[in-house]
Length: 311
Image (cartoon, rainbow, N blue to C red; front, top):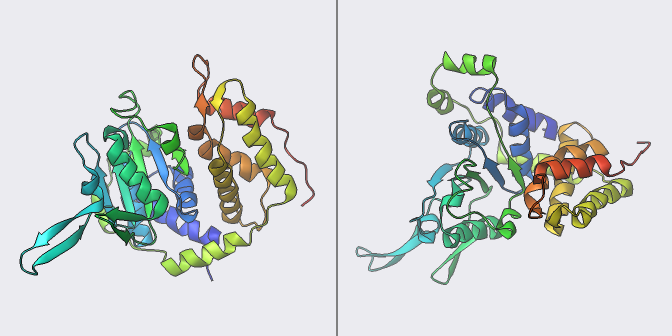
């Protein structure tokens, strides 16, 4: 029987063959995947976003598709279309790239709101509707959307309500000097990815998820989560605080984080650690505020009283 800790370590060790020095980012991607959520990755070009997700897909044995978002991308380019099959004499549905286990929505903020909504609907409902027919998506289904921060958030910035549908927002950042030097002299990353083996199965995932369900969350921790959430709603630097969807995401992420650490109970450190990834993209900063969302959330975490428990 595999534990959540073993499950995560297998994935991290395998993906590390391609992505160097980003264990924490990989860990958070695993948490999103296990929570059946999706991740928004905002970073500079060339930092390894595509390689990370390709390596992750190979590691879990999932089908991978990359979709380059552009202003002329149509919703049907994602979901698929009905076309007339002359040989059969009837209309046939041709599935789009969203019918995969792991989908990279590259530069999602360059597509029109209509196309963005088509993907976000698929993310939320785990299904797509085409010409009145509903089609279930693959299981598991995991999306990573990327944004390029140096282009004023792209042509069509995601509205706050759509950002809230992403379980986490992450950033990879640059490798340090020694890590980058080790990458320069090694075999091409694409070759390494093609040689990656699948190290976990769907049965392993289901076993790990059953363990997560047994992770207990005390009343003190529940109150701590709500204290943080309510503090975002009362903060004068924020025009809108964390939604109920955000508090549920923080709860679930804390459970998985605890299980990854080999515990069957959540401690305040789990909540505090995951809050910096789960909450900042869910709040709306007041116009004229001198701090960004990340700094405001950090201040709230420092100000909210941490419960002291005897566990």
